[in-house]
Length: 231
Image 1 (cartoon, helix red, strand yellow):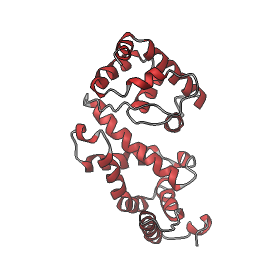
Image 2: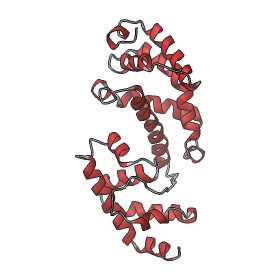
Image 3: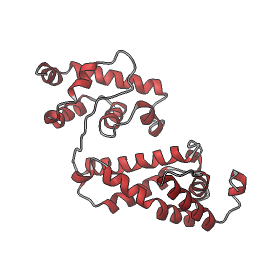
Image 4: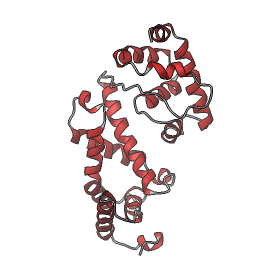
């Protein structure tokens, strides 16, 4: 019984048991069926089933905790793992309603968004406490014509924080700040940024244009030019 219509006939307890089993199979690299877990999420988020959500928490808490522990911003954030685990579950629950759930066609995309919630809850906490956990990395997946000099500057860890402050000051609006933060702090590609911010950008092409303009402005800035001149 794996058809969507058939799965909807199952009780939450049966769905949760199957989801837990399939999750264990996935992590042990055995064949698995994600349909049970996807339906459990649908039951929790679309049907607002609190009992299903409780089951999701029990099944996925270890995975979310692992994401938190691996996040580069955790050591500087000043909170324990459970603080961010609970925050990520709250954010995911609040962000994904019935309409948004339909954007995620399978479990993999749903869990990818869940991991983005972990990223955002840690970064937002750091920002609110005036902690910058910056990890500038070379930006991949850029359209042809972007400045490679901006990509080159991120290899020097000694000046990351100073350059980050300069970059923030050079952003002209919320869109540029979002692109800057999601690219450099989250390490996300434009398509991933757009998935989480489709309400801010008219299209993925617009996001690319914003990113190109920002990177070109950074490359013309004297502080960045001075850094590049020494390297």
